Structures are given as C-alpha cells and as structure tokens.
Length: 279
Image (tube, rainbow, N blue to C red):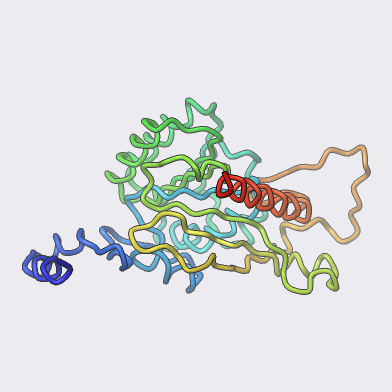
C-alpha cells in the first residue's frame, strides 16, 4: 500500500505533491515559513520554520514564561527586514518597550489591542485580513471550537504568522490549529550554584510539539532563551514589599516562581496520567 501511495504521489503535479504527506514524515510547507532562529526547533517544524497562513498554538504553563522570547527572531525579521506590522491582541501584561527595542524589534510597527475575550477573536480575524500584517499574536484563556476554526480559516487566507497563546491545560482539547506545542519553563543545569542574575541569562523552555503534520517528537526540545539585561531590574533596585510589581507581556517578574509552578503542574499532570492508566 505504501508503494502504491508513493507512486500515485509521484504522478501528481508538484503543487499537489506538497499537499500530500505520510504520517512518518514531516510534511513539506504549504506556504512560506519564517525561521524561529533556533535550529533544533526549525528542524522539528514542517517547512523548517514558523508557518505563515496557518494558526500555531503556544500552550504555556504561565503567561510570560518565555513565549515572547521564543518569537523574537521572527518578529525582528518581520518588523525590521520585511517592514511588516505585528499586532498583539489581549496580552495579559502591557508590552515593555525597552525589551522590544533591546531585541531589535521596530516598535513603531507594533500594535497593542486591549480587548475582552469575545472581542479578541473578532479583532484577530480582522487583523489577519489586513495587508502588510506580518504576525498576529493573541492571548486567550478559553476558546470555543468554532472560534478556533474561524481563526484558522482567517489565517489560511493571509500571508501572516498567526499565534494563539493559551494555558497548557488546553492541550487535552481538540483544536483546528495544525501546529500545537506545550512550552514549559526550565532552569539551566547547575542553577543552584549560580548567581541568580547569571542563571536568568540561561533560562529556557522545553517544547513538546503535540500536533504537527508529521510524526510525534521522540522527546521535548530544550531551548535556551536568556533574559536580556534590559528586562531585568537595575542592580541597585530593591523593591519594597508593599510596592506592586509591574509585569510585562515579555516576561513575568519572578521567573523562579514560574518555573517552580511549572514543575508542580507537570507533577500534577503525571499523577493524573498514572491514575487514568491504573483505572
């Protein structure tokens, strides 16, 4: 049967061949891709990069664990080289201009849209219809299946990157997004012996791609995503206990607590999995 399928695929026109793939192979890109800037991740993505004209879901343990740092290379390329715009819809924290500038992103091409969850999906669809839009990033806690389908259709009709950032527990639900991955924060090896400011330059994410046009990953990827100096508090600054911390879309203030929370969440999921298997 495999030989018959292969012969049939070879007889097809090149544009149709690209739309066919076998489950044990990573699919060829249906549209242009943009490098993530991380070679290991690019090799795992169909088309060797972030797909344009398609919805990608980033499922995170906590908002601000590094999802923005993961996208920096693509956002810099889109805003600085391609001179296209990026829209952030309903981010949980306000964008941090200093960090965006430190990353080399053209901040005059960044739009920030504050919206309720219902408004956010409408705004995302409208953004994807605009010419000159390089990427759409949207944050949502809940998403109805029909809303995801509409967003995927809107992404298909565009030439933009489309990212939907949702909680990691959404992984158990089906989604119209062709590419989905769980992003969990990790500390560097030997972090306990490091100065905290030092290990902030070496923190990263594990990335488990749970859906793609290809076989599952043998194991999650580990990607180092250092926190840049511009995003850290001044060395002399020591906030008082009663002062409210200011969080930003690019990162949360206390990454150590986020990582601890991520470990607790992973442990809880493992226990749930064991209980299901033993039932």
